[in-house]
Length: 339
Image (cartoon, rainbow, N blue to C red):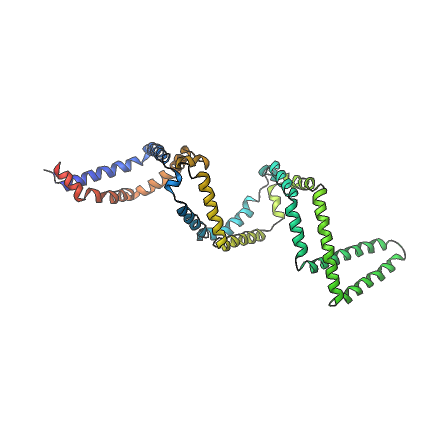
């Protein structure tokens, strides 16, 4: 009579062979289709909030965000930036208009121009900035220099006026020098601050009344017909890399702040309020995923991984290690002995 342990070993060999066959060749596609359908069927009976608690979801989201600065991400940030600039952006076959449609751009510009509250708040805060005075003074000096230079060119063409302009320029430079480091300079700074506020009023009126929307769209149309490669005229390779690294740094140094944690928690709560009563399967359409998509992705990557694991008997060994404790257990051997 065959010993129970010998029978158990033969059954174990048969099941290992059966399971390896299930994930091999054409049979694998049938198994995937069957299992995906069955899993989706079970998922359609499980309500999301019954399977996942609100606190667990908050903890998971925070963990994912906290670990978003892994070595892979850090290494790829700069490399991807360079690759984008050197290869993707160096394209003469597509125009910017081919990539980005005009209609949403026009809607974006129209919305920005119509945001009068945000514009006025920004302009008001600009006028309140402590350093606005010196900035305005510098702006005024440069504007004055440009005006004087333009007048000088005009005066050079009229006999006798050139000398008068030279006297005027000397007077302006002398007055400016005398004002530096004195109370007059303070008054000048306050005066230019007042001028800056007058300028912000002009900007405000321009945004309200001038055809800013049309001008912005004309600017877009000029670029929309140019190759994508033309965008590289605005940034060097080093500029793009530095900007990407700075943005990445901002994200990394911000993600663990307490306020960001509150935002993440609120986002999870909103998700639960909206989708908590959906079944797990019911969430798939909301994510734009179908059962066919799941099966397709498994079939795209699974066979290569499984075939690699089958080399040298690795897959069979892994399956055997999982099943052997059952077949050699006292309960299994006792059943076989009774049979």
